[in-house]
Image (tube, rainbow, N blue to C red):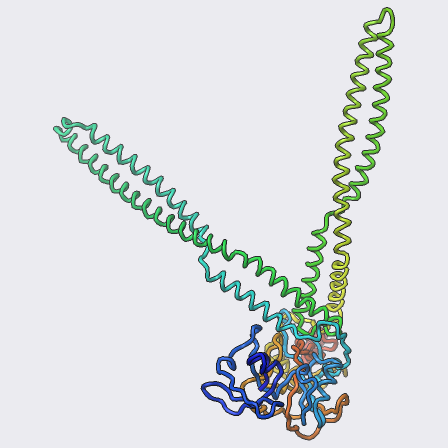
Length: 588
């Protein structure tokens, strides 16, 4: 057994990565002999054996299947390595150097990953996939060398916990309360109308008087009024009951809404926390895919992850740019120029006011001042003073506006300086992911209507006409006819979950045949042997596979689209018959 977490007291604690041999299994749990400690035995409780860690992974698993990272530093007699496109030069060397005997590497193709209802068009064989992966030399500083799924499971578990608490709370009854209040208003209006109708009927009956019933006509009128009064009383009673029921519903919903408001006040912080965790999860996968793209394998976690990473980086950059104050440099230039013009105009207005006042003094300084000149000089002074005041007010407004625009531009420059590094990183990541999408376009080509069966069974057998054009030499075979090897690790997880040792059996499962596999010594690829080799360790590359590559030959495309074929040899007999008919018609 392999320990994936710590167990025991602080002094004798078994740490993560400890292995042991199961000696006995019972109701109490497992009795395990710890490897490398002599005769030390530990009884593991059943609850702990069946339990999981905080990220959802098991506490224990079988030790005969190890990840490449977990097997580093160990040595076994024989090792089988699961070859996937997630390998690289470092992991490949570690995986192929754990055995005393030649390592058996099982090269596998990625699993099928539908891409918007289509099929990726990559016809590489398992050997070509793995060889291309082993040719990569990753940067040890990149996050792509670590498993992103524990963080993914941790964040998703936290989001699920918050959602569970929110879903278990009382529902918001605001809309129900609004409808109940509308119903109560209608019921009260009907009650008021019924009360008025009842009062009118009773008043008419009372106005008939005792003498009115002496005649037959009066008695008939009295019976009619009594009947109207009883009907009005019944309607008033029904309206009162409806008002009572509506008020009861409103009171019940008010109490329910009060409970919902109290729950929202106590647990409402979880909704922004969920948004923060979702943003953190998206950022985690975006950073992982960026690291994979830098390492040369942008499709390590599938096409959807790559698209989501590019989308997230684009919108993160857009949000960051939107948070920066807008550029008002043009407005700053306009305000500065307007202020300069206004300052000049204010100075000119001051000079004109001084000249107008001199003229007024000269007009008043003579022995016999002329009234017309005095009035003209006084009007000139008032006009000059009014113009000066307008220019002063305009200058003050422009200075306030200039201060505001200047402060805004200072904030903008500070924001640009503070976010320059982040914006540069996001821009580089966006360009990198955009190029990755362009470079992997061939692997992500989709068809509008993907076949649900192999191409040969969907399109039928190939036509047997001797003049049918042959397929080009570079065409590949249909997906159902190319042999592929399968992974040897038991209970292989889906592409988006980390590979972990299986916990269903203490003995390794039978290995597949050696078709499509290679034996190698550390760092060397050797020819495949005639039969499988017993293993004492099976190494998993511990990374999800990319999309299975499927391609169709030129003949298959011509069979599906016969009009696009350059030579319609399949319809040659019909062409001969039609040409004969046309010839006979022309001769006739």
